[in-house]
Length: 112
Image (cartoon, rainbow, N blue to C red; front, side, top):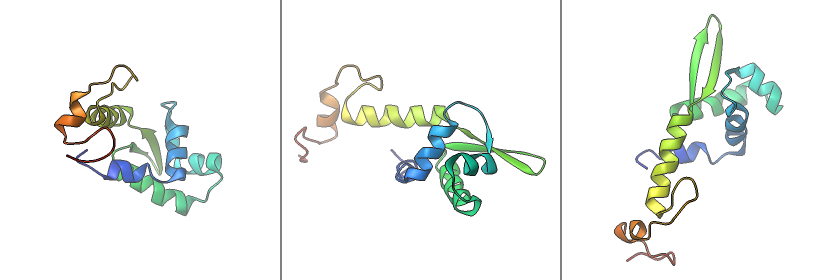
């Protein structure tokens, strides 16, 4: 969790909607995304920049068009790091009870 931009980017519902749209793995232009989400391009452009700067999406230029795609591997790495922090497996499997204790976090929410 070295980079809070990842979590900041997930804080807005429009950005989460963009990620949900891109999760198919297909590349979309900003115009395609704006049309699907019923939002205007200037607003969407700001959201796409935040997602790109956080490493959640990549952009590829083709002529005058820019195509956006989700960076699923980056998301997997951050989810794994978060699960390691709280002591659960990313697949929802078993708990690792020592991980929170090693971080000085009590399971009741307090700190040691």
